[in-house]
Image 1 (cartoon, rainbow, N blue to C red):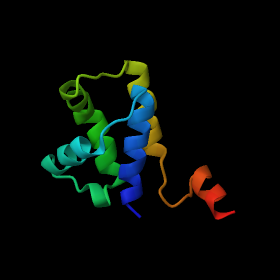
Image 2: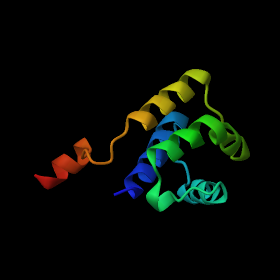
Image 3: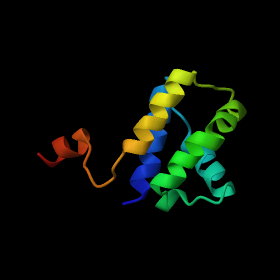
Length: 93
């Protein structure tokens, strides 16, 4: 279930950047920071966005505006992996 938080982070970052974010560099960065992407906790995701995201994006040659960063932080903090996404709800029908 916790992998959903990593997947959500990838999707939200891709939306914020306006392009597809490669998953593997993010995966490796989280591992290097001592975070487990397979079991990414809410606190770890928030810490990554608050402390490490700007450096990670700079390494990829990207950046987010302060407004985009605040929006991303808010979305990541509010995400609950227990609640199915609208896409998952429609797939059940």
